[in-house]
Image (tube, rainbow over all chains, first blue to last red; front, side, top):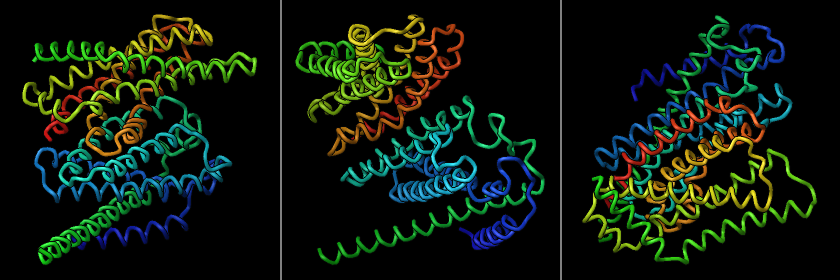
Length: 225
Length: 221
């Protein structure tokens, strides 16, 4: 990853955290000050979707042209995406505790997100239970593509068909395309971009770590034989 | 290709009828599941609500279908799969498996429906829509479970893996099915469920298309 992108990510995050807490926000009933969760909770889902998307892309590339490094890319992006998903879930639960009165409400979007996390946990269980390295890479790539495509109706269509308690749907005050306040817009988009960049950065570090580990074990293997 | 699919499809049936213990095992599993439901609810001497009926029905179906479709690749020995590999294309194999599993799933859900009527209650007011739902869910279950079974068969703890991998994928089908069942139980007009039925068709297309595309990669080993 280019150095200037890392600098941009850090500066953006600095701006988002300062402006997110200090800037003016519109007064909407029910939400009040918790509207600031938009800056910290929603970007997690943007990050998760972006990272899972990158992971699926690498899985497709792997199926077309098997290569150990492509498999590493797919796994590590899924790994970081899962971490983002868990963070999104936790920040959402903190917010829901104030806005809805309790952390878990069985909201369609909440359930969809929980299922998405289950899918990727199953992906890691599958990886853990296959012994042969080449087979593990291939089968988990197949599952990754299949699960991602089966998940899309889950996360993007079903919550839109039913009324959700999330702001912006079902008559709740919210910030959809039309009434997202102009003061909030730059901070929110900045946060989404910054978290996606940070996610890719973490993934690239983990991938380098893995590459070095694999090389080391290869060297050790050669030394012992 | 079509010829191969037809031969493999008929072969599955012949094999199934020859090993009567397997099919009677699945049947007994279904009967005992429904009987357990009947006993647990009847002992409390209260009739169940619509929501409970549909939850029970789809839970029984889910477990039954996973157990019966799981054997499509898991129970096959290594020699047999190598033999298939030499005589048929992977596409023909997955299509025949999906077709066969669809028939099996539909037979199981129909039998389950009849048993539910016998033991528990039948509150379905709109039979045609409900049958259509059973057909569509069978296709969806069959196509996702056939592929997952192919993946799980390669791993060591395949039975647990089968459940773990398939549950999250089947939730979207189940959600739609439960929603239609609710409409059907409430006796609403069929046109209310059209949206959900179209969604089921769309999910089926995605799942079966992907299974068709991805299976050759599993099969290669």
